Image (tube, rainbow, N blue to C red):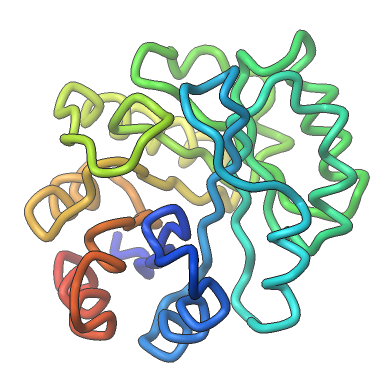
Length: 219
């Protein structure tokens, strides 16, 4: 089955002195979503930005805002990101004691909900929350920094999750984040991914449109 491939450039790799222009540029270049990595320096070893930046960018783009929370605890900030303009909010099972309740909260805010699996997190973690999910994100690097190398041992996990999605009968996106390039993208798609987060693979290139088109050719 051929699934439409979505490209979600990661704002983390953009020029932070020109964020508004960068978002406009990738939208014009054909990006499908904007991926926003929220890091707290506690759950992951880096600090990025918060709801104020999401809100500031929201008025400048019509792309869906795909907000990936790498913060713990996540629950106290869900409403703030929803109000700032997130369309989809993803969090890690390790970011709070009650994953099901956190996902319910996101849905209750009128947003799509996602769960993120670190390289060491088993697919079985989300077996009993599939009915609440709109997206599953597989980290193919350890979260916290851009520019890391792709962890190939995650490919069987992607394939397992694709089977879980198909067995659920639900429309759930399977997203990949970390080390995505024109070399690793085909491997992820073959395993079952349909959304690729690309940081330096887009923002690190001189021609954003050509970079996005190159990733699409992997499908």
